[in-house]
Length: 282
Ligand code: GUN
Image (cartoon, rainbow, N blue to C red; front, side, top):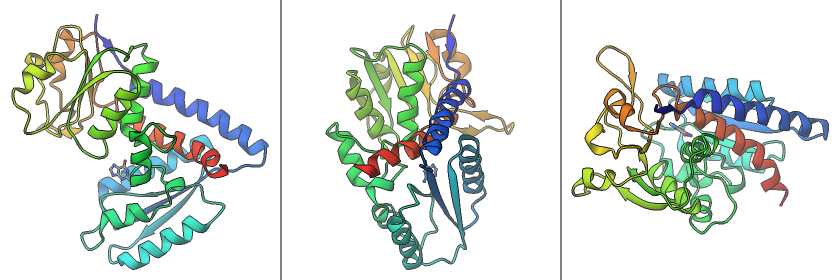
């Protein structure tokens, strides 16, 4: 029987653990605060931002919402970030992506102080992950490690294949799997004979961005498959990068879409907010 990895349940468990921790911190006089900045009114971003605020409310994290107009200049946004960097009562700063075209994303992300960078996008945090030092880790790959661990899936010594080399998912995913003593291969659009490589994977993490691209012939019998993709198909139904129907029967464990990786991203963001307090005290 294939184990369906329940991201909804695991993220709920993590959020409940954090809720307890935040209550204890409050008793000791520490409040956790996340500042969430959205520029413009991209509908998908508005949904993500609302979900983040709701998660904060559930756990007991104070959230400050900055909903800025589309015309906000880069200079104004950078000034707000600098102000929040300097505020002792703000622990985490999150700028929702994508930003309007007239604002340079890299400049914005690099302005967030590394000790408040709860998304884990600042080069200092990426570098810390690379050399195994403490710092914030990008939420989606951190969530995938939690999914594996809390589902009783051993990583050490396993052949791990990551499809996709983005800064937010693929690259940090590979680094985290190495940290867990996996043997890691990263594949991408220029990989020759992708099926041959993915066919060796004990753990296959798929972050390609193409609906249902990974079919059963890419997957080894008994593999663990983690699907990072989220798309809407012709019938307006959600699907992942993995053709779940054909792949699931071949796997020992697989994440569904929705309800797999998705809910973990916010849970790990909340975790980073809670951890930020200790990081800032050092
Ligand atoms: N837009 C889509 N995903 C993310 C994310 O994880 N963080 C931020 N800041 N923006 C996003």
